[in-house]
Amino acid sequence: MSDAAANTAGRTRKESATVVPELMSWDTRSRRVVTIYVPLACFVFILLFPFYWMTITAFKPNNELYNLRDYNPLWIRSPTLDHINHLLFNTAYPSWLMTTMGIAVGSTFLSLFAATLAAYAIQRLRFKGSQYVGLAIYLAYLVPPSILFIPLALMVFKLGLFDSPFALILTYPTFLIPFCTWLLIGYFKSIPYELEECALIDGATRLQILTKITLPLATPGLISAGIFSFTLSWNEFIYALAFISSSEKKTVPVAILTELVTGDVYQWGALMAGSLLGSLPVAIFYSFFVDYYVSSLTGAVKE
Amino acid sequence: MDATTSAITWTKQRPQPSWLVRLFDWKPFLIFACMLPAIGLLMVFLTYPLGLGIWLAFTDATIGRDGRWIGIENFIWLAEDPIFWSAVFYSVFYTAVATVGKFGLGLWLALLLNNHIPFKSVLRAIVLLPWIVPTVLSAIAFWWIYDAQFSVISWFVVDVLGLRDRYFDFLGSPWPARWSLIAANIWRGIPFVAITLLAGLQTISPSLYEAALLDGSTGWQRFRYITFPLLLPILAIVMTFSIIFTFTDFQLVYAITRGGPVNSTHLMATLAFQRGIPGGQLAEGAAIALAMVPFLVFATLFSYFALARRKWQQGESND
Image (cartoon, rainbow over all chains, first blue to last red):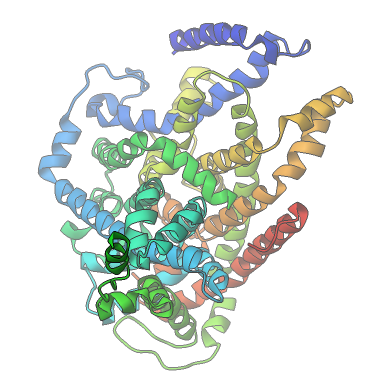
């Protein structure tokens, strides 16, 4: 830990030497370290610590886990795969993962399809009142799932979808569509309208314009909307908790909380291993697309 | 001769497209077809349940039995329920404290990240991590950090620093549990606030700061008279989102305390869930959920007026 700190300190010294023109006379190097790097290091430490703790607990044998006196809790003496082994082979974890993946992919495709068409109609076909429809869809995003889940549970029950993955695939678009539509409207706005006019003059139909010109140009926007939808549906909790009751059909977040917490003795190693494995797909997925993610997040808010 | 033949082939009619293609090229129909999936899904699974929720709040429905209209009886019942009022109080308290904490720390982090620092993009990615990971899973990590016997914070304070002689009881009694949940919520909310405000900070022109520096301004003055006013529009939007989703938060509380100890950490959403789904009192749950609406409307109006003000400031057309 101190090693790494010394390392970054050394690096910062080198870096700040290269950006000397930035520094004002009163903005000395030591002042910079105190006002910028120290608080930044604290932030990074606090933001990352729970993940470190999660990881280290997942690989720690039980005798070290429950003995703080003889073992330093911040480190592992003899790492073990017992918890992960237990999780993968003694519980229904693999099937929870598959269910969650299927639901996330299904609802993402459904919402992307609906949102792309809606965003295209609002931004490019420009009918009378299109901006009010856009505003209404934006407001729909502000309706939180916490006030919808009770009537939705009743509906799901009456439609015979209770305890079926389709209940989630059909209800997740209620928060995914508004978000994706709003993001894609912003994206379509950045594509020059002249391209479509040219195509219209050349005799293309509007559907051809959509599939051959606008959509290929909007691919980055579609990808970021897809990433957002995937992570949002992977993380969703309250609908999955309310609409699914049988153990093997639960999604990962719900299953870890309801199936792994048994009785009064919490198996912290297995719980943390489950949380770690449940977080990894999203984290990996996100690390590939982090630039899209940040730009679309900020772009969506700037709109 | 050549010119006439080429003229003849040139005037040849294009093949008439089929009626289906023409139908999809007819603008009103195309608009209808494009809006149908989105509007249809939202109507069926958002607008209708919203109405159904309002209806349910005025009935006596339970799971397996359709309700009949009983007027405001549910609300009268709730008004005499101390647990409900404690949930209202904690929802407001939780939202207020967590919002202040998130925005204070998030703004600070955004200002720090707005400096010239090495590995900026890596730092941005790391900072977003708490927001990406499923809330319930990080909440479980917090639950473990807050454990009464094996908490790492207690271990650090008691066994390493020796500042106390007893371990903290984070989740065992009302007020410590309330503060612990707020801390976890702030932890989760900082990244979103920091990254969006960072985007706002990057749109502020550096020439403003240069001009202010030439005029001999202090750091605080530059923040107060340049950064803050120019950040206000985006701050208002992000804050509205944050307030709405903090007020209706469910996952964090449900995962860490489930409303306990002795119902002291119930938010309105968790109370609605507990009464509505496991408790089976759908109507009562719907009434509690409906009671959240006035707060949300207030937050949305706040957003709307902030947006309107921004357009007026920038002299934008209504686009």
